[in-house]
Amino acid sequence: MVQDFSGRPEKDVYYLGIARQIGKRSTCLRKRFGAIIVKDDVILSSGYRGAPRGTPNCNDLRKCLRQMLDVPKGRNFELCRGVHSAVNAIVNASRAGAAVVGSTMYLFGENPDGSLADAKPCKVCRNLIINSGITEVVVPWQGAAKHYLIKNWIKESIRNPTREFKDIE
Image (cartoon, rainbow, N blue to C red; front, side, top):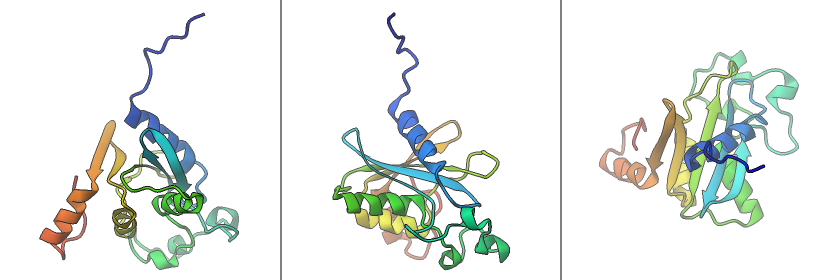
């Protein structure tokens, strides 16, 4: 029997689906995030939100310090025992000796109820993405894919150095 490939997903959907599956390994109680880094159609690295290797994670402890202290979203990251998926993907690429310069990161996030989370990288992750040499970040957005060009983040930072990162594409 010949297999029908007419339903073949386009690349953004394909890579975001892989990032979503990786995010299911997250150990964060607040959100599940997964990231992959792709260059020349090869997945170089992946990462999910979770505690550093060999350390206790919130999922196993069944508690989140930031949640217990009612810390608002986007604040006091130093209280979190987890490492963001984008950072883990960059670190994992380094551990494997993979050069990420010129690559694309696909980032997918889900809330505990399974709904889509805002997958825009936080300020700390954004800075690491810029320094790593990744050129683009792709996230799901309103049923499609949204592309963030890193060169635009840099231009906006130069143009408005005190402006908080919002939605620069």
